[in-house]
Length: 296
Image (cartoon, rainbow, N blue to C red; front, top):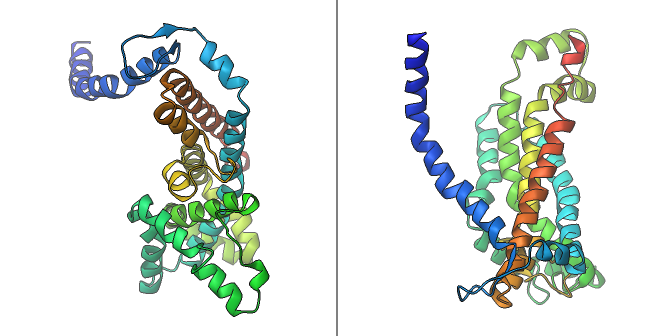
């Protein structure tokens, strides 16, 4: 009994600094933000007017918030699906362990190590209607009608931002799936080959179930990244044209730093956190059961 108490005190001694820092720099600011969301506040004075849940009611009735949330969800579903499929295919194709595969994995990771500002500028050059590489290529291959102002046209602005989002995020998921593939025991693949299972059948019934935990982590990361996207959208389009690329955090920035409506902006931030946590919990709940457990 005494040893158990000493062990508990020893563990608590090591956990206390981290818990205190987490409470001070994470829990307290979040609680403070929730408190501010209950006020009408301009952000430049100490005068605040308590409005209760008024900011949240205003948020629910705001069509721009609904539109920005829809754009976040579109990025999550469309760009997220593209990232998962391409990253999984590339990681599987590069699962050879050779020098070339390692070099290619580093190449795919390259966009992750450069600043989002640089990524946005690179893609603005690529998509520039006058001298961009994309329009130049389309004109060179005889398709000048397809050359558009990709970021200035309402129908193509969000897909164009989505392409940059995929390009930037792809390398991380290639590395994630590559690590998962390397963790699969060699004996499993050898046994599948001995049973005559190969190609897509082996991938679907052996490889993919073995990557279940990695897939769950990848989906949660996608939820967080897609719903918290800001810099890429703001730098490339500022939410335009005509709010066709508006996302939750660009709308939050507009309300807080342009209109000085910090109470409403904080309510938007609280809603953003709640939506991210709810979707992440839904992903964990949906994928909590490992398909391999049913085979045991």
